[in-house]
Length: 189
Image 1 (tube, helix red, strand yellow):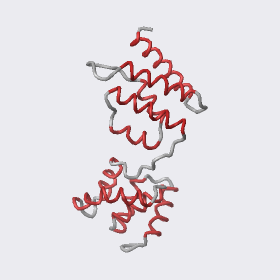
Image 2 (image 1 turned 180 degrees about the horizontal axis):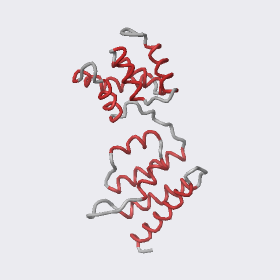
Image 3 (image 1 turned 45 degrees about the horizontal axis):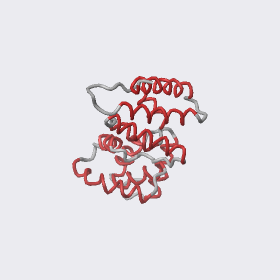
Image 4 (image 1 turned 120 degrees about the vertical axis):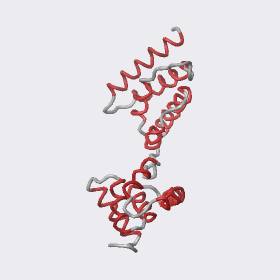
């Protein structure tokens, strides 16, 4: 298959490559180098990952203008930029319990004064335990943020995470204990 490969064939190829253990970046770079059709390859990888086609097309419209800045042979660099731009992320649909936790973690992020951009992917993929454990290590400096609001939201999020079974329960419970201690320290209780 070369230039002009059908969209369905590209999606099938992408699915096979992903199933074989290649990363989304590797799949895009290989398909793009082979076909020269970078836009079609973005769509193929997104759809193969499970991103709905309409969402994949919207993501493509956002990044397609960047393609003019690159030439054939730079597919791996383009793949890295697409990954950094979260083009290939599959947004996870959360249940009501998980949405409540995500909202609390969002409240904590705001009370903290924000979060590193790299965590955006964790929010989108529903990696709530990872976010909780990352935030549980927070240390406030320079008077930024609102420690009482942060630790209150984190304590509630930790309690909700601890109420469900999971492989990270020991870490969650340790993080929750830290949150409780920090909340008590900032409120004087």
